[in-house]
Image 1: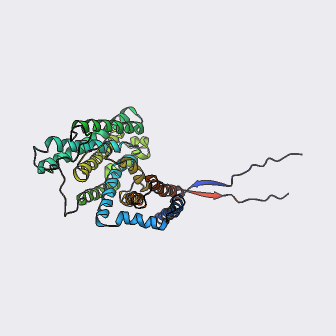
Image 2: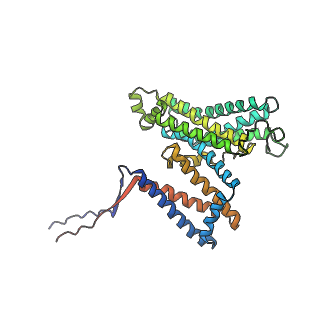
Image 3: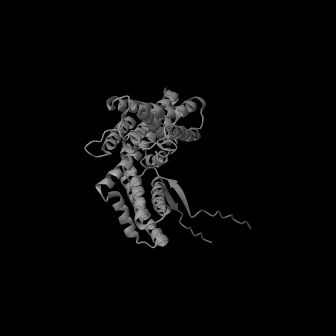
Length: 368
């Protein structure tokens, strides 16, 4: 007698999709957001006893309850979008630039240095262009340092760029102490508060309108650069395969350095806007974690600058709304963070079902 060995097949297996139409992928994302809101509402009700519907109404009011709140939301949106645009060319090239936080900080430091050292010596017509050039160059230099090591010595860019964040934080901390006002406070206070030297002009009475215009122009530039320019094509080829890029005659080192110079330059612009237009001061936390959040924005949008507007809006809205919940209901900040985290988890998880599908095995009965 021979015993047949029966292999037990798994109940299901995961298969990569060949490609899902954009309409269906966005339906999946919207369903994920709806499921997240329902689940977060249940968690909120269990933890706090508050009506989840009222919680979400409060979130909407926190973001859109007044014109000032709308402009504040736009400011958060465009600054996150700006940093997201900066990291996108590097990530599309498969250069994992985790150092946007430090590049923004260095750009902000360069802007601050111009305002502090030249604020009383140059008119705004000369000072502001000098601030723009300084911040762009500073951000580009900070970004190209790890790119040089990657291109020439194949160092790990993830660790290198992450390390540069800590270095940037300490450099900024040094100059904050050096320029502190008042002395002994450990803070800079509002820079040139009486003269407004170096303050970027307000357009149409709207404090953040210029930021919105600048970042929208950057969106158009980055979309054209990535989709239609020769440089955009080259960095995409390098991202797919460095060997293929070399085979067709591309200078891979040059593409890496050029792309990171661009990435750092846009981070420098973000630093310029944060100091010269938004905060008018410098802190070690002025980037506000945008360098890391921007990675998620860029990835969720599939490196498409137009789609990044939507993903940036979602994250900015959840952040504003969650803060409003904490204030109105007197809840701990961690509750709003839990709500935001649940929603983001569902959104990120939806990408799995967009890229993969689950196939269940049908049970087969064997004849005896």
